[in-house]
Every structure is written in C-alpha cells, then in structure tokens.
Length: 110
Image 1 (cartoon, one colour):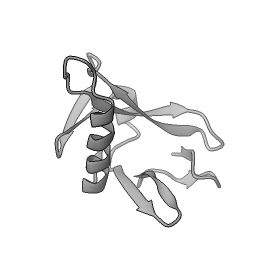
Image 2 (cartoon, helix red, strand yellow; image 1 turned 60 degrees about the horizontal axis):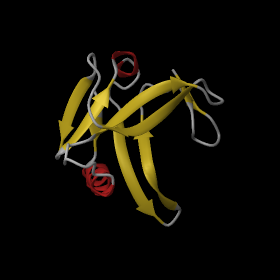
Image 3 (cartoon, helix red, strand yellow; image 1 turned 120 degrees about the horizontal axis):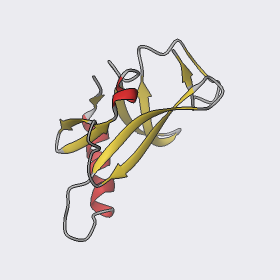
Image 4 (cartoon, rainbow, N blue to C red; image 1 turned 180 degrees about the horizontal axis):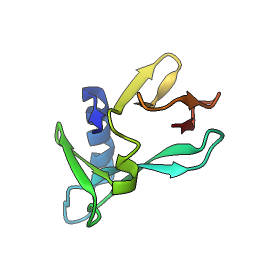
C-alpha cells in the first residue's frame, strides 16, 4: 500500500496544524487518483475531517491517510515524499506502477 516518508509526515502535520478545525478533531489527508492530465491519471491531495465508509485508513507518524477503494488499485507500492530543495518545495509521488508520466510531471499512465 501507500507509504509516507518522514519528511512528508512532518509537512502534513504542519499543514494540518494550520488547518485545525474548531473542536480539535484530527483531520487526515486524502490521497486519490482521478482521471485527467496528458497521461490519463492525476494524484489529488486534500485534507478531510473523516474517512469515507469504504476508505482504507493508513496511520503513519501521527498522520491519518484516507484512500478510497478505487484509488487503492493505483497506489500499491507508492511512496509520498516531500522535498524542499533549490528547485522548489512540494509533495512528490513515487509510483513504481506508472509506465509513463507526462513532461510536466502532473499525470501518469499505468
């Protein structure tokens, strides 16, 4: 299934702290695969309060990750990383199942 690097967990926790809802509920990060982009599929990351009924919930270093059943088919073996380097900062998805990615790196095909 999906693995989240320590750096990504640290960044997610930082962002969740900024987004903390009233009442102190622990939010999570939804990682989804949607159709779109040049190569056919795109990753979507969103903060949500609760998982859906059919979601798989992954706990990693204090972060809850929500994955719907359809997306889980495309996320097996994936590593979610966060890089803050000279070329910019952002989340990166390493997917060993992706056959190709588009030139801009925003979408992939399987």
